[in-house]
Length: 185
Image 1 (tube, helix red, strand yellow):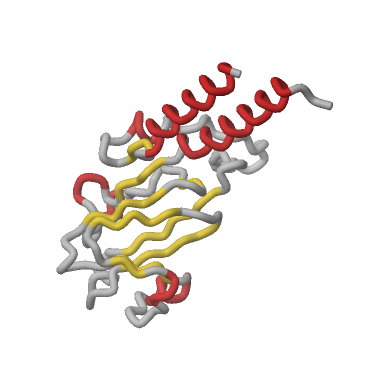
Image 2 (cartoon, helix red, strand yellow):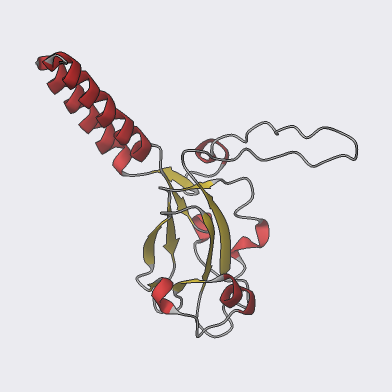
């Protein structure tokens, strides 16, 4: 039978593993400083970013002028303003949208002509456990090799582009309390 200390160590390791995954989440401000607006992505806002399960998107916009609607692939391609709002519909002007599963995710503004004017976003969300490294372009006859990973978004983007999840500090503090409590036994 395991000792009480062994059980505490296992509990501590499990808690730290869970907390570490939360602390590594990134909150992406869509469109950086300019926010969610027409043609925000013409400069390649998504380029070089890896969106991971657990991250969040922060859409900032004048709430009287815009919306954020999560749509399917076909509605996105057609800028279908009558798209099923049950996938997600936000209107606060400061919307935090969790990325809770891997795969493609599509967003549009459903105000007339806004989607057609570039107020749309398509991203690929990767599984946090197995984020894919980008691959270098193929040269005919050359072996495929992974590219050097890009610097972290916080290091290569303006501070507003990617901010550590606000629970990160709280998670670290909670982990410290758990460690202190476990060591006190």
